[in-house]
Image (cartoon, rainbow, N blue to C red; front, side):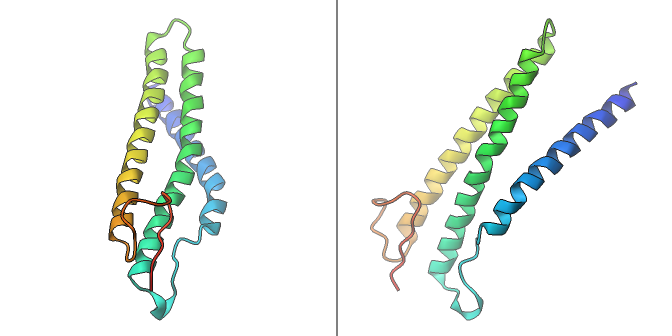
Length: 135
């Protein structure tokens, strides 16, 4: 009985992973993360590539978080008298909120660092997600 339950659990997880992967693939294909080719790569291109990777991960994070919110809400709505199922849904939602807060905090720190170390940057003043390199 336990083995069958584990197979169902892995099947659900694999199906969810496959669905999210199919949903994200068009985003990956159109992201254009690397900004230079061949000999044109310099420090500015490295910073711009890092900035694009961070922005792409933020763009992908919110739909994944929304799916986890829905799953957590589903667990809560269908918990009935099962305290463990209610707690599982509540923990999923709480972990998602904490994860979003951590990711946004890391984005803020990294963006500030990029603005400080970028050549020609004017400190942390300016648009949050733009690196303006002076060549």
